[in-house]
Image (tube, rainbow over all chains, first blue to last red):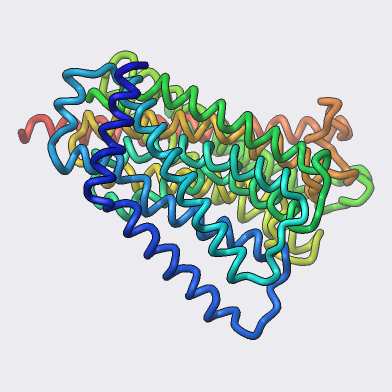
Length: 220
Length: 226
């Protein structure tokens, strides 16, 4: 646990020093959002469609940002040092903690920008929306952190990442999009309960499998 | 596999196809003669899922024993599973055209087979992006396990939560996929269905053995050249 916290703080400080991930991700979000605004200019976007678009932005932002956690270790040649000093599970937990933190910050930015620019996206059920983002972002972070560990060993990392992640993330994406749609349409908590169950069980299952299998990915 | 077994499989499947198309079937409400697709579509989906499971099974065995033969088998099962998924998608899509009026309308069942195809596609993309054999074997095995644990969400949970037009979902006639776990088919139809399942499973085993043999020969010649 201590080692995991050390990895989290290492990644946190190296991110503060370079601001590589956050700067490029903010630009990515602005670019994507403006493309969507250009293409929907003058159209009325229905609330359910706007819920889907929000998650498209979040998904691709995560895909362009989260792979760095492991790819940078391989590129800088520091993966070997971590393998020597730290238990594999601590590496995964530390990286997962950092990626969850990153995606929470990022999602907060995306949602604020989206609420400001998309008039049809008005959250009527704040509790449902908040829980969706809370559980959904963690599930997204845990699946994509693990896939990042796999692709960091492969060629053509950038293209492979979304290709591998999408089918794994789809159960989560379908339920978060449905829950977001409900929150925009003013659905009750009870209506979204099925989605929350899927999100929660998905996050638990994927995190568990990731911790069990990470050893094989990390030490090959 | 012995030569006579291959001949038996050939004759068996030919007979299943002929009987399946020619034999009169009892009246099934809402499905009618279109229910004949059961003989072909259901075995294809069954083999797609079986092959997917076998691929993961051999993958886990590779991770435990680090024997390249398991990786070759895992890849062979995945390739066959991909072919059977495509066949299940095509047969289902043709049936959907005549029952629902369109080839594709994102029914939960259609979504789940689509995701299965995506997973296989991603699996092959991952394999081709990894050059070192041991690394390719262990990483693709890990990926197949992760993919397999997310599949139940599609195959079992979502079609039951969401409304589906597929037989077995939302009050449509359900000869096979239903909550009580029984089959509602006439005895004669059931025999042809089982015969078809057995025949196509035999075909799968045959193809799997050929593919494994080719994989092993390739791997051995690779070792000799090094």
